[in-house]
Length: 262
Image (tube, rainbow, N blue to C red; front, top):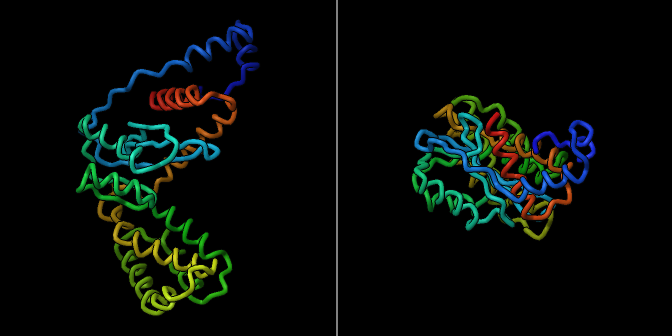
């Protein structure tokens, strides 16, 4: 489940033949592990993200930032308000009452969070903001507004204290004062202009929730731990291609269960 051994490898390290190994696989993949018990009342700081598998379905995961344990997950056709709300509502009903959560900028997830926990602090993943913004601005922009905004965005990883935060905000506000109206008036149908407008909008909307981690060190600045988790999971999962949808869903449940036990 977690090492990615092939049937041939399992045959060579066990006393079973191919038929027996396949029967064992089928037996366990038709079942799900018992739900692990967590004291949800003490869990206050979370990370949440989803990842797609060949655009078929999405695995959404809720992680306790303090222990790196996965406390909830859902395999769904997409990361939507309904699927996210279901996870959060079920966890709230089980006495989870977090103070803060780190997420990417999915607006459906943000709405679901606010519907379940109206007072929760939402930290926007600064790695997502940086990566998406730089992608839209391109590596070698030709427009001066794009060049200047890219220069401002590249300072995000340096924000480790209040002083650097204030410098970043001042620099962005200076950029907005100089270019904001001009950028907003550009034709959005133009690919380069449209991407510049998207980058501006991204920072404007994210700014109020970009730097909560400076006020509380328990809040994760990024969802990098979850992205690393997804990366390792996909590497192993690729060795189990061909699973039916039901077996695939159960496989993820077993993987998470075993990893939580490590």
